[in-house]
Length: 290
Image: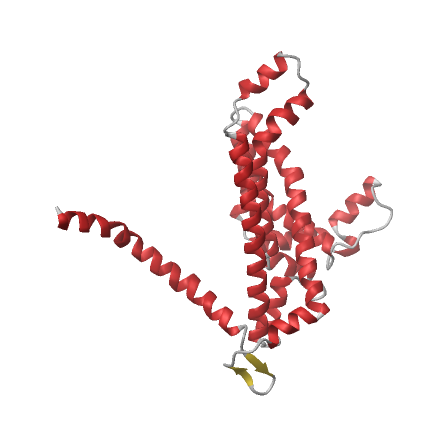
């Protein structure tokens, strides 16, 4: 009996061992090495010196250039998250109310972009923007929405538009998953009792889908803040964010310790924001399903 009990006690560890070792090897070890690298010194002629100093962190804290990069990253991520929530939540609600086969068709349309490379989708937006002669500007001019071409390439506006399109499916899926728990008969009962459609949406639907909106917001915010391909293509070298800044420090200036410090600071900021928002989501779930 004792041998059987010991065997059963080790079984979960034996089953989880390979995955745990893989996680430690490809996630924790490189992350620990990056953190350690951020405290090393670097010089143009002497290269990387394995000494523990705070030079890179002081440079990030004291230099307004880095403040601007992180502020731009935060601003773009918040705007993309808000746009995804404002457009993705109604889109998910409409999708949930559709009947077959239209629901399956439009779900495929929404998820279809996820099957295409982010680089390919971003290059498509670059072609659509295309400066003053781009398709977007031509369409807006012909519709009379604008009087002069708008600059989309190498601007925050272009990055926000492209990232919103790239990350919209994640918000739609999160809200749609939350809507699966909503009983349509509750809406019908409220309508039968005299509630208006706006009241039903505000008092019944919105509280139930808010956890999905918050969960989707966490995903979209994290992906937008750490995005590299879209800001690099649309923003170019003129408009950097934290991810492209770390890339430049690693591969252009070859200042690996400073690039590691930027990457670690971005990771820490994302963890703090995500953990805080996750607690908000858990509280919301507890209030809705209590």
